[in-house]
Amino acid sequence: MKPQLSPIELRALLNSRGEEAQYLRDCAARTSEELFGRAVYLRGLIEISSYCRNNCLYCGLRRDNTSAERYRLTAEQIIECCQHGYKAGLRTFVLQGGEDGYWTDERLVPLVESIVATFPDAAVTLSLGERSADSYKALRAAGASRYLLRHEAASESLYRAIHPAEMSYRARLEAIEHLLALGYQTGMGMMIGVPGQSVDDIAEDIKLIYNLKPQMVGIGPFIPHPATPFGGAEAGDIELVLNCIAIIRLMLPHALIPATTALATLCHDGHRRAIEAGANVIMPNLSPAAVRSKYSIYAGKAASGTEAAENLRDLEAELSAFGYTINYGKGDYNDTL
Ligand code: SAH
Image (cartoon, rainbow, N blue to C red; front, side, top):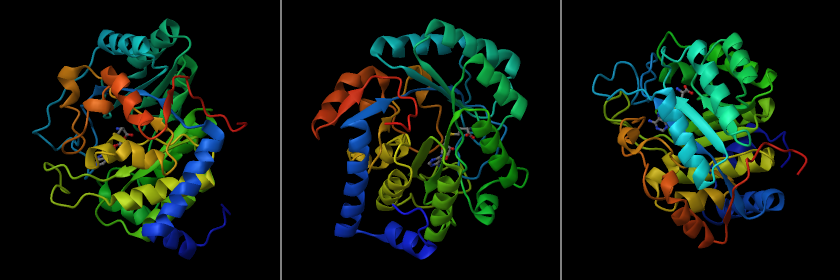
C-alpha cells in the first residue's frame, strides 16, 4: 500500500463496509499468507499484577476503582506459569500488569534473568507500562527482547481526554522511542471506539504507527468497564477494528499483529475474523486460573475456551476449521521473510 495515503484516503478505507471492506481484508490476509503462511504465532500471557498507580479513564485496574480485586503473583508463581506454557508448546511469555510499584528493577531483573536461563529458547516480552529509560535498559540487558506499550492515542487532545492530568502524551511517546532505540521488538497500538475518538483520530494513529514502524501492533475494541468513568459508554465497532488491522498489515507487512482478547470477547469468531483481516498472533491466557477474573481491565474479558493456554488443542481445531494452523516457533520479528 502506498504509504503516503492522504487522511481522506485513510478515512475512506477505515469507513469501508460490505464488499469494499471484504476486499481490503482479503488483500491483507493474502499479504500475511505470503509472508507467514496460513499460520499464527502464540504468546502466553501472564498477568502478573492488578495493582496500578495510574488512573486511566477507560481501564478497570485504575487506582480509583476501589471495587477492583488486587493481586500480585510471586516470582515463583510466574515461573510456574512459564513452565506450564512451555510444556504446552509456548515459546513466548508476556508478563503484563498494571504499573505496580512492587515490581522494581531490583525484583524484575532477576525474574527476567531466571526465565531466560530456564527457557533459553523462549522470548520474554514485558508489558508493564511506562518505566525510565534506565529501567528499560536494565531489563533489556537481563534478556527481555520485546515490550508492548500501546501509544493509546496519537492525537494529543484525545490522549488527554482519556487519561488523568498527571499522565503525559509526551512521556508515553518518549517511552516508546526509548524502547525502539534499545532494540526491543516494540508493540504500539490503541483501542477502537474509546469515548471521544473519531475516525480521523484513528487515521492519526495509523500515521504515527507507520512513521515509527513498531514490530508489533495491538488493536482491539474498547469495552466499557462499569466501575470506570467510561462505564456507560458503548463498546467499539468490530468492523472498524478489522479494517484497521487490515490497513496496518498492508502498511507494515512484517508486523506481528494479534487477534486481541478484546475482539474475541465481543465476537465469538473474533480470532477468525481478525486472522482473515491480516492478524497473525494469538495470546492465550497463561495466568493462574484463580486470578484470571481479577485482571479485569474491561467487563467480561475472555480468559477461557480458546483464549486459555490450557486449551491449545481446541484452538488448533478452531483454526483448522478455516484452514489455519499454529506456528509453535518463537516468532521473532523478521523483515527478511
Ligand atoms: N499497564 C500496562 C498494560 C495495560 S493493559 C500499560 O500501560 O501498557 C493492556 C491494554 O489494554 C492497554 O494498553 C489498553 O489499550 C487496553 N485496555 C485497557 N482498558 C481497556 C478497555 N476498557 N477496553 C479495551 N481495552 C482496554
